[in-house]
Image (cartoon, rainbow, N blue to C red; front, side, top):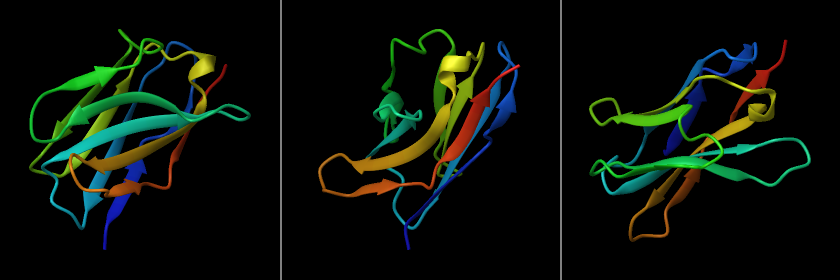
Length: 118
């Protein structure tokens, strides 16, 4: 059974930091694109960052560049999103997504709420 379990969300003050984790199981971690998306109330889901599990290629959206970093631990089948200098506009539900490089596999976690507020 495929599982993607996000954790690490919560309430943080502006300027603070959070580290999200996405622990995966039930599939071979290699050969996937691991994505972090976010969705704020009333807004479309937005791609925040992605990383290729079988290599080191990664991408971070312009809106979070310089503040967010994506990383992975292949031994733990886990992807991380380090979020620094958080702003109220970063408030959203953050979702982990796994998409195979060649097969139509497309799996999602349940999401974790991040709220940036004073």
